[in-house]
Image (cartoon, rainbow, N blue to C red; front, side, top):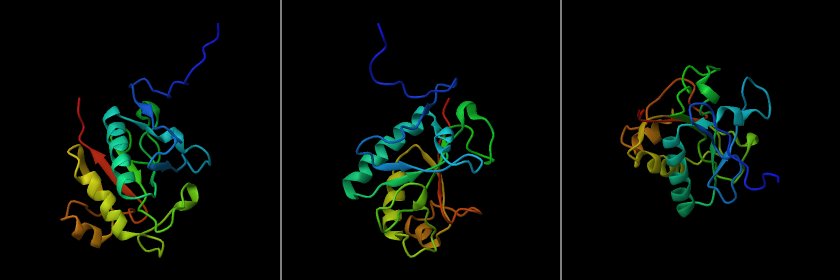
Length: 172
């Protein structure tokens, strides 16, 4: 008798699951790579169960107000191994892309706060959803107008012009 059914979502020894990569009708898409190797982004998307819950909550809320998807990049390697980030080892931090004016998704959908395709107003709405959730502890993005619009709860950090760093509270 063979094992037939839904494949099990990859899980590491910490009990962290890989973010589902292409769920039907999801409000997000995935992007990224590890060490510049194409097709390896999924390897850096192991998330603490609380972060997964946050992602699933926000993507549903986002889809209720906007039909575009937001991009999720680096979270953590399996087992929390160190890689090109000084952070992103605990599964409680993730990178997302600013929202684009068009509906482009995937690797090619990179956008900076300086690009004409960057949608500041939509990015403010998306970050407002994240900041409205009690699990979110830190948000870094270098757009000072976004920072002002969100009451200073978004801060600057070197290198965060083309992605937003979101972190949740660490819980035992």
